[in-house]
Amino acid sequence: MGNMRDTTVLGAILPEKLGVTSENSWMFVISYHNIGYVKDDDANDIDYDELLEELQKDFESENVEREKLGYEKAHLVGWASKPYYDNTAKVLHWAKEIKFDDSETNTLNYDLRVLGRKGMFNLSAVSGINQLDEVKKSIPLITKSVTYKEGSRYSDFDSGTDNVAAWTIGGLVAGKLLAKTGFFAILAKFGKVIIVGLLGLLGALRKFIFGSKEQEVTKEESIVSTDNSDPKETEN
Image (cartoon, rainbow, N blue to C red; front, side):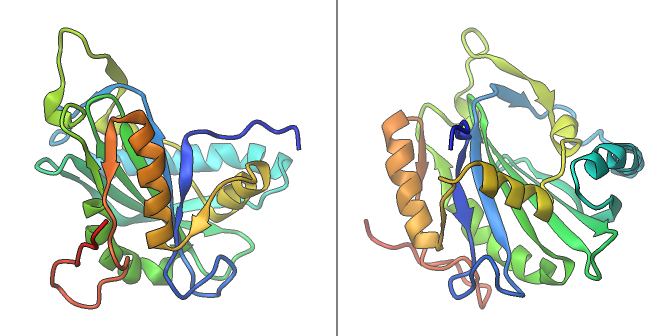
């Protein structure tokens, strides 16, 4: 009531048979950020071990503010999945393992950035660390579901007219965490965040994005692959 809605958040993806409060549930929060074209020149030059040490120091320094806001302290244990940039698909992957003082099970933050000509899709998974394998299995289906229309793809960049983002690949990885407590704070603040199954979400994304005529999201039948075959694509 009276709160501004975060218009960058498009929704969230959950496993088909699990809800937000299910013990073994996890979710991908999806947003789009029109930050400009992110140069990937530094992708192969980043020392991710050194970056991890810097992030761990940042976590500890931010704990003072977290306590003031009523949240438990958070500690970055390490990479749950070391940063990797898919130069062909233009998708950045990385995952953090986070320890909260009052939690017996560590938290997983799994991040994807799908780069485009004018910005990027942010896909951030929040779960227990024991869901790492399950979350990783879902990623091929999810990344195939997010594509840019011709003219808005990364390869369509025009250096003469397009804006270049202040962020680099290393800068994206060094961004703030989306931890479990942080996500539920978002839910409390922005009541219209959509939490649906994959088909419903991607249908909503398609409707939302077709209005902008810049990005396209295709529908998939399931977000959890049970084998190594390519996911089936449903008819519109």
